[in-house]
Image (cartoon, rainbow, N blue to C red; front, top):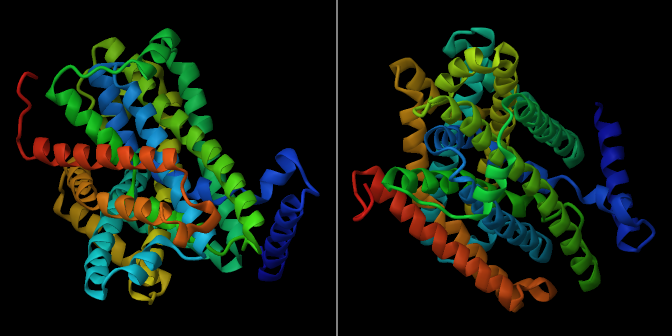
Length: 434
């Protein structure tokens, strides 16, 4: 796509959005120009880290932890909606707001931790895509890593043509992943009565279940997605008055619900496919993606295993690109400067390259990345709730009291569960649970 044609398409999107805001377009035609930011953010909710935790949970405990996926997804909807709303209301992203309202020294510390979190996130995503290429096409891991780096960089280059081409490309990846899991649902023949029951009835049997439940939430609500979403909405469709802010906010909420519902379906599908195929056949110790692929082949056939890897590739490529985008927003917002995308892409390739060269177990690397994310996640969530509850900052888009209460409850749950994850990861135990 040439730059002039891409810019024309972007201007068409803005014009269509203006027509929706003035009620010249209604229904789905009015919503279409606002679709994009939440779909990009939703990729963080179906990245390779989700594959690992959902598959392990389903294989070990069957359908019993589906309710955790539902809970995590509802919290994700709330948090991502607040992030997007912050960008619309202020014209600034969350890191910029933190830099403006916090002491400079604190801003730099938060930037450092956020950069570490972004790199930890990209580690899981990059390893997922590399592993997918290795398993699907039998490409050596180092060559697969280089191909992953090149592919994700080319995806990121779409941003040079405006916001719309990249939004469409990432949205297409989300749809591909969802289609793959529709196929897996058909092939795995899960028990739908069990899916419905365990999606709403909580269960927590032992400390392993607690650890996996916390891991599922930790792999779902991602700090880089919280930062990024506000950056995607801050200057996309600029509201001209308070009425337009309200309307854009409502369109944003609808998009978040659509995109995160799709991501939630994918996460549920991962777990109930694993429950049906692995747990249902006595394979209760599927703890990593490679084992899942190798076990799927004899149980459901090569077609199912190939579909699984296609979804992993789509997830790894797109989520790694989105992680790099988030890194740019984090740096620009916290410290006011950026680096060329190719430098960031190369820099974020170094940790997975070291892991591959040293022969470190990829699952162990994923665990370490999740621990790092657990340490950093409370920071953006607490800041987000603080800003969005202030009328002097948000204006007409300030949180309603019930939204603030729900957001604070979600924050407390996230903080407590992440502390619990750290405690269990480093050998702690819960009295009364074997």
